[in-house]
Length: 243
Ligand code: VGL
Ligand code: ZN
Image (cartoon, rainbow, N blue to C red):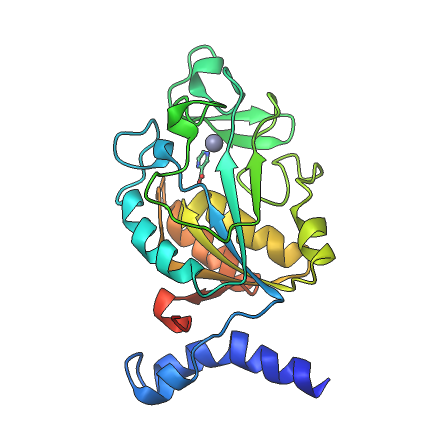
């Protein structure tokens, strides 16, 4: 019991407190940096060509997360990668809905769906991971959004709220209880993944400077508010001990 509490304090307590008490650059703060252990995983969400400059659904500054994530990943024993992986004509594409334009919404059986430009089609260069992403330790690639009629922003659960990707069971089988989420985009796949991590019983943090947002109609603020309510911590890459 003592061990668990102490670890929780180090992993999920000190970063925020340290920022207020000492400032991010002080030696006191540096000494309290988060040191990921065997029960912790870094989830690298959708760092794919589609979501960066030149891609089909570019996120402003998306490519800037690559050096940050490469450095972060070296500090983690467990690294998991996701890819948005849609069928041609996927239900989340505006082109699949007569009279609809990208960034409009529609109502599907499972609720409201934002309609996107065609993006991340299975096997395309657009859906490939960025070539400069260097994650030699990555142990699992989870692909999601491959059911024609169901989107999946979250790495844990498809948008119908009941079809699991298997990620929670995988992490639990490996003794992981805490996840740190980074990648693209902050207000969609990163946020939904972090929220579902909490629902599945994991401690969860989003590494803000290792993400970039789409920010559609206030979606970024809404996502941070929702995550704060759900107990998702908001940290910076500098809060993780470098190796
Ligand atoms: C994403 C919109 C559509 C994401 C994926 O990775 O955040 N956003 N598909
Ligand atoms: Zn998508």
